[in-house]
View (tube, rainbow, N blue to C red):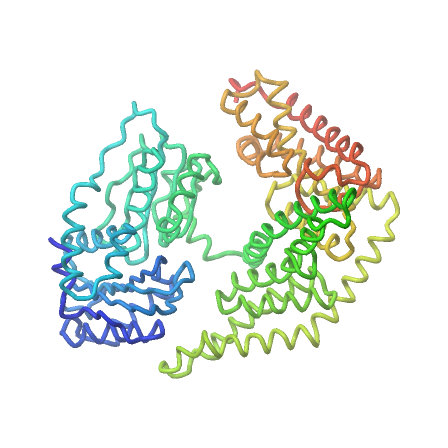
Length: 624
């Protein structure tokens, strides 16, 4: 069946008049109703909006694919619409949408219809084809373009079983979206096209409306370096037990295929362990309050880290230049792009707060969260005030969504552009100004005073705790809590004392593993020895996560030995009163320490202790 059998010329809209997302949906639904393609506008629109509520069908690159499968559809149809100016469709890449494909599938759509819709979805990941559609001026041009593209593509998506004798790098993937008639197949094709470009072999299973296609075999799963699950609905997970599984939204399969394939090959994903539960997604629906808070907090920290790393390392460079050329233009330039008033460090707390808020209340919460974070930074409420601003703004917007849920549908377009921004900012800003900022300024000032007054013994104890926390979960909540604490002190006072503790503590685990693989070679496989060499670089660069694969395979020995070594390193930095005035950089910022050789010695001692404990404790590889 040809795609153009569903893509009718009589329902095409070559010049969409709508300027908002919902208006565009209404305009396309009206075209379906006018030509008797649907029998109930209300039911069909509810199905469309229900799908939009799960995640935007604005897939990016100027394309939106609203779709629904419902009894309200008389005839399987695709409405093609084009907007020259583009409109905000809440697309995943934040860019305006220009091309629209509204897919109307009846409940009883046969397999031929579903396969045709899948073929349509696959074509839309081809950039040159999409550009041609944007330039089309008449329905006949659109039809001709689809006929030509489908003819050119026939036979190019055929799956072939993976050969067990093929030595090429190999990954497997599963794609699935809630309705299974668009994103599932776009993600499949994007992954396959990118794999071919990278010279990587891939097998992709689709979980669409037509059922499971190209089901992965046990042999393929066993052979694969990693597994990509790009899905917004439940898929069968137990079969991936013991494999590195990268779980991500189906939209990432469309927009980030190279990143996903690269991470799967590097096994940059947790090892999945099946415990008999139905699947991971069902358990996520029952997240504890603590888990939910951690997820929101990590969203803020992960977006803040690039500012910390980029600004911190360049700040370290500026400190080096200050030593011999304090009046140079380069020093002044670096100070301006990194400093707290004009540069990267100005954004730390606002970015933290904004993305905590957006994790809770989605995009409408981003702006009030960032403004609340900026208020906290400027009033002295510090990181604690920024954390409060983020959570406050997120839950304020959630509350506003409930308050405005009952307004007439004709006013829905005002919510994101007027109601949420105005009331979200007013309420968040008001609470921060009158309540949160004054309270957290007092708390922050008290903590800073207490830290400055710590005696050597108490400082060493705190250094031991901070260093050990960096190694407990190597990038998880304990690690990030210690690092965030040190960053907070550093940005509030400019004192890098505790940065020395967390940096030394974070460098020890990968360095200890590298040391163990070097001097206890008979206890490691060849693959582990190679990974060990990589950990020298990661450890010296202050990338604690390099130790995670070893910790996942042998958690007791790796974590216990690493915590001991990191705690010793952190304590030594405080015993020797070390100070590192840079928030990142590892060995590359060691020259900035007030006593560089002692800072390196603390790391070496911690590394040797942890490496020896792990090396002697670990069983030879053949016994494991």
